[in-house]
Every structure is written in structure tokens, then in C-alpha cells.
Image (cartoon, rainbow, N blue to C red):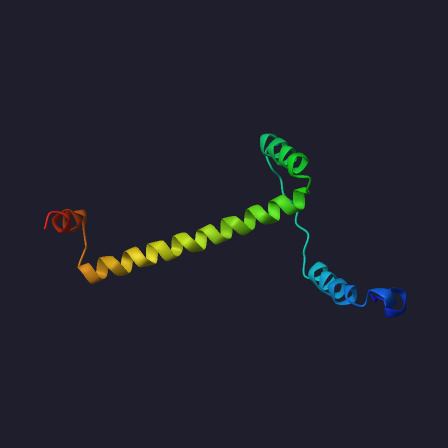
Length: 100
């Protein structure tokens, strides 16, 4: 899609934003998702309450899900590194360290 600069000459500052939005749209893909009716009801309630769209709620939910997964990965990695540094190989080792 092509945006003619002549049509927006009074709004030069908007032109780059329109191009960015077009690029975002080009990068999106459509998926089909089947959800249980109780989830759809909760989703629709949230959409009404927050005055947004199903798409936006699901995008934000997935984004948070992915971010939380990355955080847990970092926590597990830290735990494994700490266990190696402290020589922890079993629950008995943890108990021993607590009572030292």
C-alpha cells in the first residue's frame, strides 16, 4: 500500500507514524484459535471492561506469558549455577548447608 504525501502535507509529523504502522501490519500473521466457551466469556468481559479488542488482549497476554517464561528460565539458571558453586547435588546437601 502506498501513502501519497500530497494528501497529508499539513501533517508531516504523522507520515512516519503511518509508515511504521503499515510496517507493523505487514509483519502480522493471522491464526485460527479455538478456545473453550468459558475463556471466550472472560475474554469478552475483559474487552468490554477495558474497551479494547480481543486481538489486543490476546497479544498482551501472550507477551506477558513469554516474558514470565524468560524470567523463570533466568531464575532456574541462577539456581543451577548457585547449586554448582555451593556443591549442592541433593536435598541432603541443602539441609546440611542450612544447618552449618
